[in-house]
Figure 1: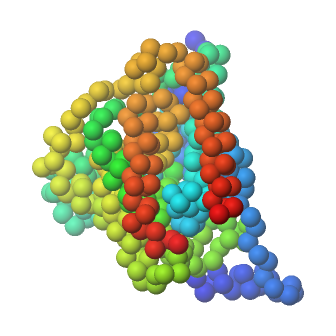
Figure 2 (figure 1 turned 120 degrees about the vertical axis):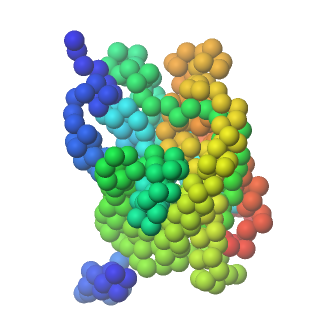
Length: 197
Length: 188
C-alpha cells in the first residue's frame, strides 16, 4: 500500500527522528517569527493601537497558506487530514481563555512563541514574560484538580467549521481566503488613516 | 552574554564609521507565507501543528517533579507532561529549542541582536519588567484554560478549521483590543 501523509502517523520514521524534525521545524518557525519582527514587543502590540497591523497580516497569511496546502494535498490524495491532531473544542473555556490570553498579550507584550524569539534576540522584557508564563502555568496546573470540571464545560469534541456549517473544506478554504484578503485591505486602510492623523 | 553580544557588534562594526543599522523587517505577507509553509510541513511530516505552551508546561512539570515527586504524579496537569521518561525529551521542547536558535540566527544575520527592553517613554524599565511578568502569568493561565496559545490554537487550529481555535483567536483579539486603552501608557 502506498504511504500517505502525515508521515510520522504512517510510521515512516522513529520518535528519535521526530525530535530532530521538531528542532528543524522550530528553526523555520523562529526564523520567520524574527523576520516578521515578532521578537519585538513594540511591533507586536502595535496591532492593538492600529498603527501597524503586521500581527494580523502575518498570522492570517500563515493560516491561509497552511489551510490551502492541506486542502490541496488532501484533494490530491497525498494527505489524510483526519490524521492531523485536532484540539477538542470546549466552547466557553476557549472563549474565556482567549479573552484572558489577549489581556496577557497586550499587558506583557508577547505571546509564548514570540517571547522565545524576543529572548533569542536580547529582549530582557521577553525573558520576564517567559518567567511569567512559567508562573501562570504553574498556578493553573496546581489549581487544576479543584477546577477541572470548570475546564470541561460546553465540551463539543473534535469539531471543525466544516462539520458545523455543512460546507466542504474546499468551499471553506475559498471563503476564508476571501475574508482574509478583505481583512488585509481593511487593515492597510486603517494603518494609512492613523498614519495620516 | 550581553557584554559579549555587544563586543561582537563592535567588532562587526570595526572599520566602518558607525555600527551597521538593523535591517528592516520582512514584508508581513512574505513572512506569513514562510510561516504557513513551516506549519504545512509540520502537518505533513508529523500530523500535528506548532505550539509553545507545551514546552513551558514541560519545564514547570519537571520543576515540580524535582521538588515534590508525589504532587507531580498525583496531578494530571503535571503528570501528563512527565510521561515515563525524561520530560525534556518531548516534541514541543525540541520545537521551542529550534525556535530559539532560528530566531537567533535570523536576528544575527539582520543585525538585530541587542540587549534591550522595549516600552513607551512614560514608564521605566523596572515597571515594564513588572508588567511583562504579570502579562506572562495572565497569558499562561489563559493558554492552559484554552488548551493552547497563539501557535497551538490560533495558528494551528485556525488552519484546520477547528471551531474552538477560531473562537479562541477571535477572543484573543477581543481581549487585546478591550485591554489596549487601559495599558496604553506601557507602549505609547
